[in-house]
Amino acid sequence: MPDSNPQTFNILAVAQAGRLGYEAVVLAASLRASDPGFPGRLIVMEPQPGGAWPGDPRLPAPVRALLERLGAEVLPFEARHFGAAYPQGNKIEALTAAPEGAPFVFLDSDTLVTGPLSAVPFDFARPSASMRREGTWPEIELYGPGYTAIWKSLYDRFGLDFGSSLDLAQPDEHWERYLYFNAGWFFGPCPRAFGQRFLDYALSIRDDPPAELVCQSLDPWLDQVALPLVIHALGGGRPGPGLAGLDGAVTCHYRTFPLLYARESDAAVTVLEEVAAPNWVKKVLKEHEPLRKIVYQGKGAKVRALFDRSALPRREQVIRNTIKRAGLWMR
Image (cartoon, rainbow, N blue to C red; front, side):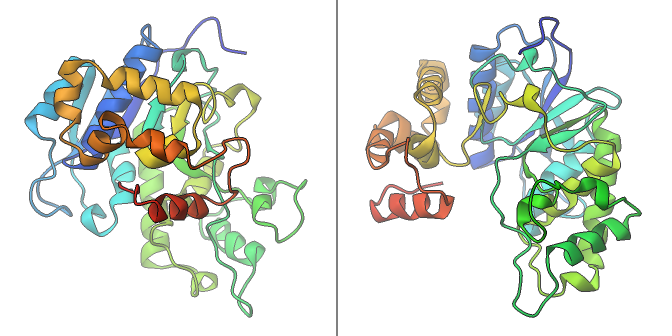
């Protein structure tokens, strides 16, 4: 049940020139519409020129102005370690520049707020993250180490207790036995402390992986490999039932606009279309081709007609391929 005394916390997201900026506008507009009494700050972290980003990754002026009109603050950070070579590392480095000591919820920019986020009963002393994930990592080789050996090598690397991270209701060597999250949302008591540990772990894994990882790809999975280790180290774990509204009735991590129309609820589609409708929002969002075609030109309805949302394919890749065959995929 929602908490009747909402906590104050910051929402953090990352945006820059291109797709992420337009997604951040949708995020900000949906927060304003779905949780108008949100008492915290919506902070959009923006990478700066130089460092690991070539050119100028900053938001275009119209996108920045619209974000600010929607109540977001734009704060800078420098990408020193990841940048263009590994864009998913943006969220790691952004945390280290966010306001210190304030509880935070991090949301990927491709997230729609569909309910009262401020009423979710977060326990910031016990960090957690999204369980809306598939068994994408590790990929077990026929003659290579199994899940236990791979994950235990990482816990051992950082002096963490491996056994207490396991879901013993799942069978040995089944991927769901091991702590594994989607990094689309996560939360904790202080972004800088969380981010520094996240950065330390990610760099260690990237630059000096344990021998058990020799057959494993870390691109694009590095953030999702390090995240459960960080959460476990900070005393957190799998989300409890009080957080069911995340990836549920309160937030929707849609990933792309075609996927939103393919598989998300009618309520999520309605929120997207309503917050994108005002002319002062539309004027900016229509510059992004997927929004222009999927939302404003109605191609989203064609995507939606391809699927029965009560019997969706279990694997996301099957949904993506169906949309591509219909010529409606865009990102």
